[in-house]
Length: 324
Length: 264
Ligand SMILES: Cc1cc2nc3c(=O)[nH]c(=O)nc-3n(C[C@H](O)[C@H](O)[C@H](O)COP(=O)(O)OP(=O)(O)OC[C@H]3O[C@@H](n4cnc5c(N)ncnc54)[C@H](O)[C@@H]3O)c2cc1C
Ligand SMILES: Cc1cc2nc3c(=O)[nH]c(=O)nc-3n(C[C@H](O)[C@H](O)[C@H](O)COP(=O)(O)OP(=O)(O)OC[C@H]3O[C@@H](n4cnc5c(N)ncnc54)[C@H](O)[C@@H]3O)c2cc1C
Image (cartoon, rainbow over all chains, first blue to last red; front, side, top):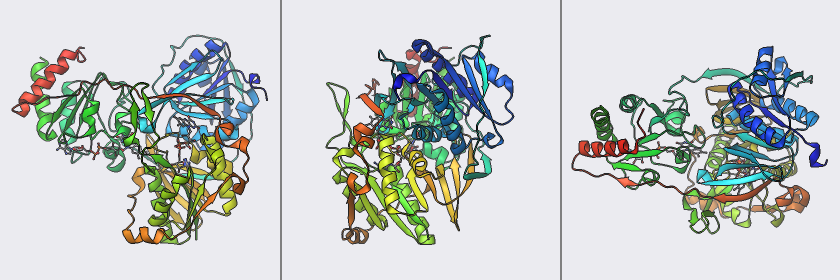
């Protein structure tokens, strides 16, 4: 198949908000290429309004696949359907939201289509040769790779909350019901345990105070909350605090949330590369750690060596006093 | 009794990577190598399942001849058979090509019940090889597994997603990708290491698994790397010292206020 048979930009995410973000970025790429932008919506008993919403947010075409099997995300049927739509309409680019679900979907789709896939891209652009060129983190998060796929469709998963959705406006667009047989998946979800939502959305916070294993109990996070409160900020944590101890829903870093606050205060955090890769875009980084050799100090603008249990309350007081 | 296959990767030790200051590119040759951290969790989980249900564990890796040291380590941990997939034409494989090599290998090895991968490798961070392999072998997958039990011909796994845990059931054969939280990998004893040194490590080339040149290496890969750079960290790195904690705190707060990041 000659590669110029592929035309158009297609976006998909099982998360509607992220799908809107992808339309924002997708619109820019489609305009550069002067091609059509389409979105895929999968589910069961899908509200037509949703399709219209996608058009308002930039889609020229919306493919809707409505099937009881698609009610909840499952990688097998979702990959099957998405690859069939892609085989039918042959987009040159497919963007998929890099949620954990999106990241298990994209490689399966790419394998069905015998093509490449680039994970969790933070920059995406079209070069002179009309290729999709992306950047993504590699080597634990210490380096940035610039790459492309020489096979089409060019598939990329896109870092969530990195691009903005467009303001909705009345636009022309077409909704297409895509009819396809959907096979039952071979895995079954027998139970869902919602995580207690602890911690606000950190992506937009302008001040974040985060704690690591230096903090001995969930209750002790109160110290960080008090400091955050004075600064109108949010509290976050490292992966062990959330994933091992379950004190928070999510964590900051390469496998969690990537943040870009004006001020980041790392408390009792050693500064493993998997963590610091997620805080690189912070304007000012402050570190508190009792170990002078802790790598976090190399990633920080200001540091205090010492016991966090003494330093954090002192910082809270100092901010209270000096912010007046 | 389950046959468990663990595909794992030997990676450069990220902490040891140096930067070429003239080009700001990472230097990855001549750096100590190790088993990718999460792949150790995958190996440990396979061993735990075997301890409970019996069976056999086969570790496989696509890599250069030096990856034998890593295979040796998996044998010391408790793996039964170790295979190195090595061929100069494999060099430069992206996840598509790597998954093809692994799929061909597994087809040659025969029947299996479980494949356990890591959620992602710590160097490439693609998080793709597992799902791609599941697709090529036409088996279901359960990703981001933080807990798993085997019951008869079924697995029940707890999947760690952003906002919830899903308890997922599947009949074997199935492919799992596991997280670092699933277990604490064992450190082999000196005796285990001695015993492992006598075990055989098999090496298979492209010919042995019947894969052609067009499907592997740079030729068989879709993703092309244009450049890799290390972003310059321009942090001030000021350690504030003072007589008392209060003084140090005030000093830091003053510096932060001067930065103007707190103006509302
Ligand atoms: C595939 C993979 C992905 C990962 N992704 C992430 C990720 O996205 N985000 C992430 O955070 N981690 C991630 N990790 C884990 C990462 O490698 C580190 O293990 C983790 O970041 C360490 O967390 P920590 O700093 O809280 O704990 P530790 O490394 O244990 O550090 C605790 C620190 O607290 C200090 N301390 C202790 N007591 C005090 C005190 N009283 N006062 C002051 N300081 C004190 C200690 O000196 C130490 O430096 C990942 C790992 C893997 C394998
Ligand atoms: C700078 C750079 C950027 C790259 N970007 C991309 C990209 O965007 N897309 C792409 O497709 N490739 C990319 N590659 C190639 C990719 O790193 C290799 O194909 C690698 O062999 C597999 O990817 P990974 O290490 O990210 O593994 P992941 O997909 O993250 O690995 C997941 C799991 O698969 C298993 N596994 C992975 N590698 C092996 C192996 N060699 N042998 C046995 N089991 C294994 C392990 O269980 C591992 O835990 C890039 C390479 C470099 C150097």
